Length: 467
Image (cartoon, rainbow, N blue to C red; front, side, top):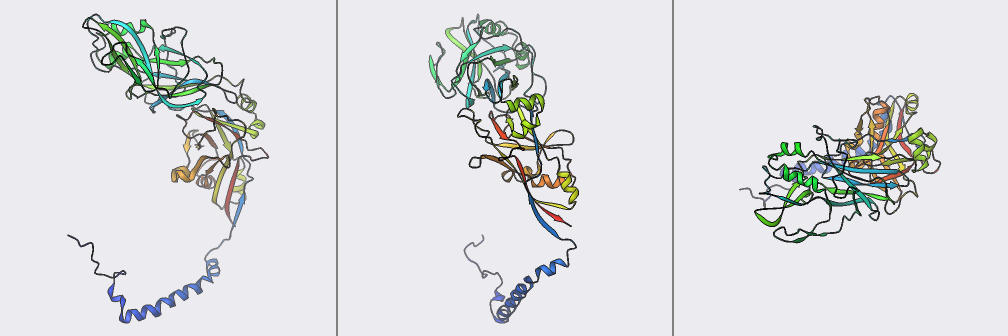
């Protein structure tokens, strides 16, 4: 065993240096070295200059020309999260947006057995609320549910613009749809109608939609064929959950937890073996294919500056205001068109610091429509793909992007990106500003453009020029 309490050596670990000749040497030699170092420091500039053949000057500017333009965002992968989004938002600045859900209920166990002479009572779709929403919960929305006519595509990534064909007639119990007001925080007393062991229970907040009896009867009629997951998905390919786009009010986008055990199809029935009502679940879970589909219905009723950019690429409007909307709806492209001229004037340029400052515009948010909390800045590669900046990879915390509430702006540190532009490692193909959490954040933000006289988007640059 090691003795952790005793220390046979002094602090310096070398006992022979503590006395005798070495003690005298230390007292005389060390002050001499320190004096020499101090004298040398006074000659630092002269010594340094004879080793450097060029002189550098530190410069700063925040007047580099920037251009920006709001454009529709590319679709993004939406099937890797536990949540999906449903609802319609009638935003006075951004126009009307709708989120719908494709989902794949599954067989809970192999060899479905509903007993002898099963008789349908009802079938319900249950979706567990996640708790997050954007907009107002006061606006009623009307849900429509359809059965898919084709299976989900056999691919790992399902994008936000995906369309899967469905049968034309809805499978909601009321063909006109199911009207509801989102209630993501309200527990619900569920009447189980005699299902053992309790007749009713309090359940976590969820949405419960009764489906058509004809749809439920097919589970009973086909039970002998439903022996495993492939046979089940051949008979029941999935469902499409959407809402009517016409609403009287602001509306909302609402998140649902798709892997919560409460999220399921519930089939209620009786059989000859037991007069008490039975219940069979067909869960939507982590093994189910599911995704969110996003739609935008034009900008006729949106902010004039946004409409002009989308429809006409109006640069004057983009100089004033630009827009970012999450869920792969809108992004802002930013260019530094005359950086090449600065490089031509000073070929040997060292970027000491580069910071992009993006002020948020006042007057375009409400309690229901708050600003996006965090933005992300990406570069456009030579192939046109969106790529993470080296500054973010090096240190995500220093990179920035969070909303500074006091300054009402977003800041990004992009020194490494600018240096690679200067060194010719990257082409000056531009930057893309989007929401940081683009597949889950439901918010949007209006920003100042680069051509404003008051608080424009600007690039603050500190650099060294070498003659």
